[in-house]
Image 1 (cartoon, helix red, strand yellow):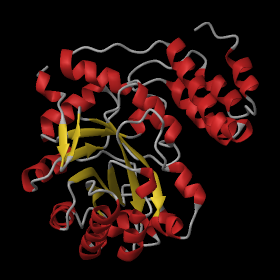
Image 2 (tube, one colour):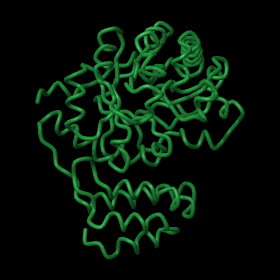
Image 3 (cartoon, helix red, strand yellow):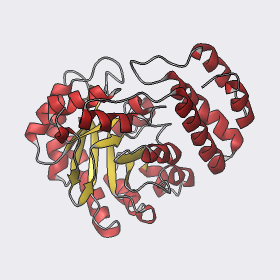
Length: 336
């Protein structure tokens, strides 16, 4: 395994020690999970997508999901929106958060985002995408100390409009310092296979770093994407859900060619630490409801490995947990 696969990344003025990133994942990458991933060595992390419109209207709940974790050394705030001026104004409001970069979402396929003209709908309007990037770059220069502006996009709207190369060119000419490509179309959603050949093609076309996303579940996947595409960094999304351990495992594999699975005991302890962080932030009752899906993900185990014995029955009990005591009672009989 070439040692050069794990390497530093320079995004304009931002220097990152490594190339293993946590993707913006709605419902997962809040500050508590990003804090866990930071402890496990994620080199860079992105917040959940935040509505520019909501920020401009003074939406405090939106600000709460994009704040930096106390132990998070480097992070980016991801914004979505359709109006260039609103995106500019929202980026100005990020100044108190002191993000290390601002990312623009041009990839979310969810109908409630797409119907506003934001997310992957932006792939249909490259010129508007360019104006949005220009606006956020201007806001960064005026209020954020000139931190890099990056963009995450899909390969196109559907199989008949694979325009990622054009959109990336427009974004870079407008000032984007990195492009992340998830090579599925909006029509695919999260189904089918991502086409990594698109990532390799984009790397050959633009002069800024390209991060690759899509179908990254194991350390071997990360190595294969880096080798096959030549991308500067890999961005774990669904492969990191309940699996912050992917970061040390991938780093180990990229540098030594081997990695070890995390024992159930550590996975469980980490899930409880995650629960306690969230409970301290939003209250026990809401945290326990929010963590049901997280616990299920933690107990499922990484791709290619067996989950916790009896995990199906376990998940049925987890979705009814109301208190931290409930969670502890559910796992009291497990020998981990």
